[in-house]
View 1: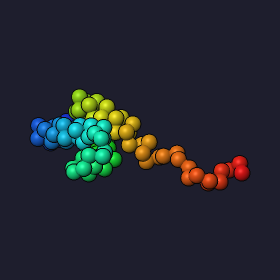
View 2: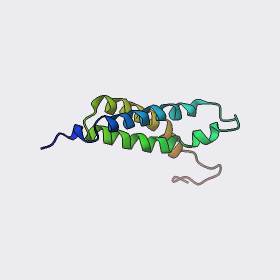
View 3: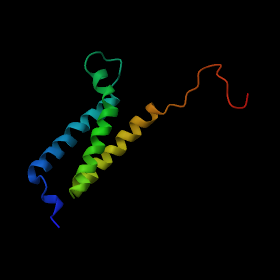
View 4: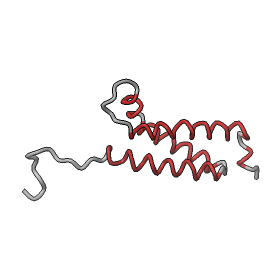
Length: 102
């Protein structure tokens, strides 16, 4: 059975690390004040998409047995999930809305 780690070699490893390094500031830009006009609101809207890209990086790194990269991108994916999931699954109810007990 061929060694899966040899798939892509150093070039794939370099591309995966570049993707990881590029994703870190995109996740961090979420903490910048959103009242700032310009590029920051656009970058902040990319945080959920960055989470999807990081999830793909985790899968590729794990399948090709690049364990350091898998751990690093897995931690970044946890941060993306912590930031992104509450905004997607908000638990707000409109004023005056009926509830199940009324």
